[in-house]
Image 1 (cartoon, rainbow, N blue to C red):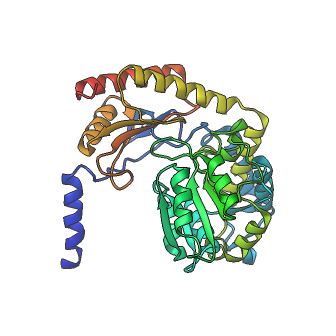
Image 2: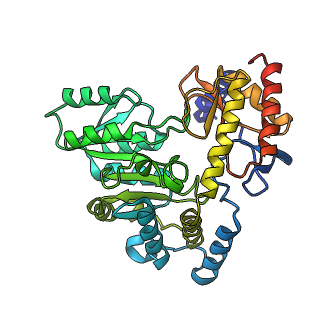
Image 3: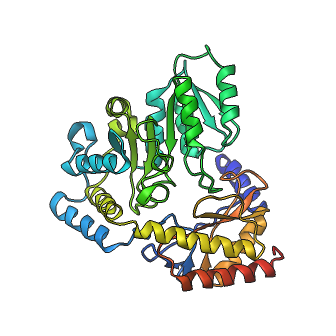
Length: 392
């Protein structure tokens, strides 16, 4: 049918350029090892930073919640969907992050889609890091606000564009990823906060890849920079280090109250399910009780990154456990991923539009779930593949 012709053409083009995404299927819980497409493989690409996605305490909490509350809330939060579990999670996560208050959304993506349009509109401006996540970009588009991008992690350029746009807007917000998910670098939040305060502009940080990773016991980027009470909005997710699902916004109590009135996913989409909420609370319990998992994550990451660098791989400029294996060429990234999979390593290729053209890579996600033996086996396979493909 002709109405599908353009899609078929685009798919052929993606395949020809090595940009077509091959979606593999898991038939096991998340962990250091997975069953993927009926093959047992070592997992190097999940966001399960702390190995909590299959933790017994989280599973037990979810099962108990189902017995008490059922499977779903069957309503939006403002009508009949707010359960005492939701309130407990929001109170607990606000305390954990050292914030005045918090609100939960259905996902981290939904948190950005709900927050940005609630704070700025057509007469306003968003000052946005040029490498911000797609959910921030889409939130900005939905808001209708004018977007002024500043050079990646460059506070001086941010201040320059603020000065250039003074008196051209009613309200403004500065927004940045905390940890940039593709490169693993960290936003200079301390400098951004100084600029935001100096120009009386709201400051928001998406801490999706910082929660459970940065700061004391995984309390995030605000804790990492000791900026408690100075960053207006912390947006994040329970789907990575916490091992569950759901979005979170923590920060100034006035902003949280406002989001409960105007955050559209909060108002018009059913609440997080009881088992998910209970599992998130259990994850907070674990992080509050010990830094064991966070410490193990960093130990594993530092070892893996050091060995990859020593063996000649370009791992970019990551300051976190995220380890990009920079390859440049998208077909090469796909070929390496396929070769690794055939040798028992699950590491997916990432190309355009997730990263810029010419910046294709294998992004390795290290986890506290990996043993020393796992890491050594992974290193052995990466080195072999790198040599076979002429990368190192």
